[in-house]
Image (cartoon, rainbow, N blue to C red; front, side, top):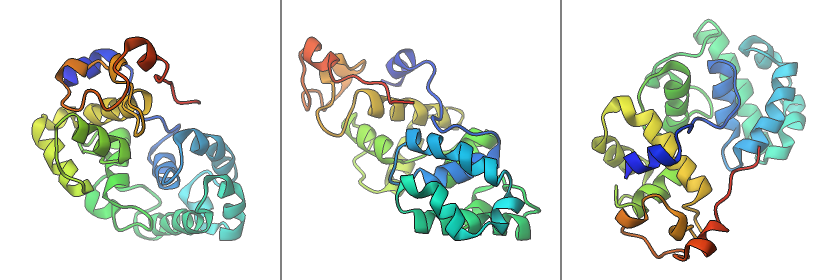
Amino acid sequence: MYQKLSVCYPDARCELDFDGPFQLLVATVLSAQTTDRRVNQVTPVLFGLWPDPAALARAAVADVEQVIRPLGFFHTKAAAIVGLSADLVERFDARVPGDLGSLVTLPGVGRKTANVVLGNAFGVPGITPDTHLMRVSRRMGWTTSTTPGGVETDVGALFDPDDWVMVCHRVIWHGRRRCHARRPACGACPVAALCPSFGEGPTDPGAAALLVREPRR
């Protein structure tokens, strides 16, 4: 199944725009409960005003809230990114640490966010059990778990760690483009012949093709 996903999504990657570990860390925290597209619209303004941990640590939370307001949950997110910036300055010499144990001590940073940063900014293998990975991996029969930790363990056990980051990218792309939460495009799915959940969405190729979509940039 993964081989077929690799052929279908050869260019899969993180869809958050970032330049370096700090920008990716902040963007990933901001991406909770919203889309990467919306985050990518806000971060150029955010990093234009506060380009590094030292600058963002000095920012007034209320000012940051106004910039990230379109993303929702902006009170919590603003406090988190200002707080994690202050922690980076005070505890890590204004640098994003490259290990899981340190990352998860930062405000607003859980294991999922840490694995995104480690995999895409540092090349450290990790499974990122976001909503798409959890849904699609269950549909494809890779796991029966309904918890992020269980999905991370089950999916990770199926692949060599060197493949973990790209496995996540391709499964997430599949979830965004074809294997939707509602009405998956089963008739236009590259793994249809192997998928135990085939038939949850339209199986007619023409009808399914209408459901295939590229996330807006």
